Image (cartoon, rainbow, N blue to C red; front, top):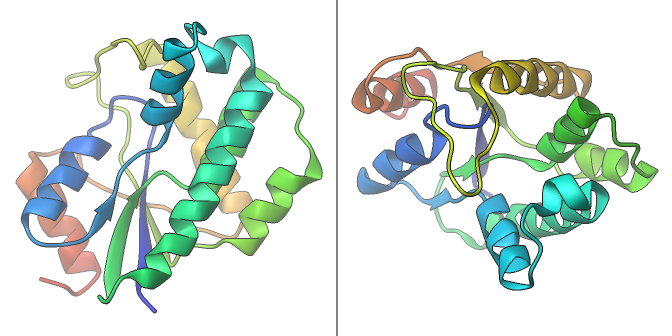
Length: 179
């Protein structure tokens, strides 16, 4: 069974760029699902699903991330990199003060990851777009919620240095003894 290596971090910290680079190096990578959920909601006329219906948005994300978690078992490889995990949904809801049912907590406990890397907020690369609307200050607060949430579930996120993508990938691969 492949190891599930998770990349987490606030919005606009370079996760997608790093994942794309790891994929170019030949590692299987599973992309962030929230952009798909947001895009689908926008097609249905809901501009910001997370802001308008945060619990529904989070349920859709949780369910999609559970499926993504299960999909890892179909890979014939030692390692699969994943952009964001199930506990992210809890961290974001805590960030906005949204209550959520126990099913979220159970999903975090049931579907676990082998190693978690966190990409810290980095003002130099932070930007906003159609799906990523958080300010840099909000991104910093989200990061704190992410770290706290993952620690609450027994993880010790490894901080990835703020450096060029090649160096970030090398750091991760060296930490995993894959380089």
